[in-house]
Image 1 (cartoon, one colour):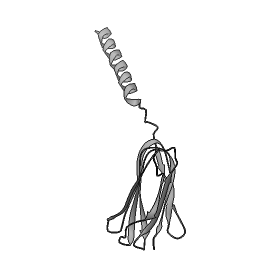
Image 2 (image 1 turned 90 degrees about the horizontal axis):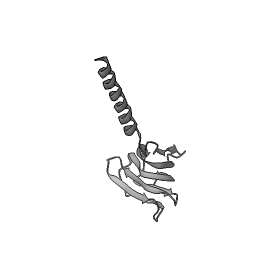
Image 3 (image 1 turned 90 degrees about the vertical axis):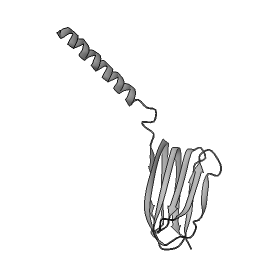
Image 4 (image 1 turned 180 degrees about the horizontal axis):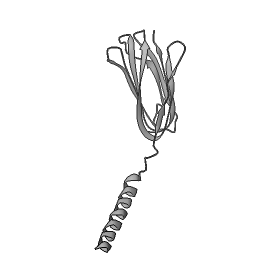
Length: 142
């Protein structure tokens, strides 16, 4: 009786270790992104982003006392994956939604957002399967 209990316990232990090994192995365990935010002296914001194949996003609250914002973003030419910036005004209306795709032109964007309601704006940076680096900036428009 003790011997069959030992065999059963051994089999269950081996199966648990085997299943644990299979489920813990993944090619994207180390895939990450990092999105930084820096505020300038005049209320401008900007930052850098990097990734090694990961996904992630960051939402930033930004006070814009004007109706538009100037924007700029660029990615390195060898980047793969997708960079997206979405800006919403104080009413939650989207005034900018731009995407850069890695390994295709253009590798930078700039311009002025559509007019929106001044106040507390939100800026969402999203990286999808992003491998490389880049930067972005926003400043109050005219």
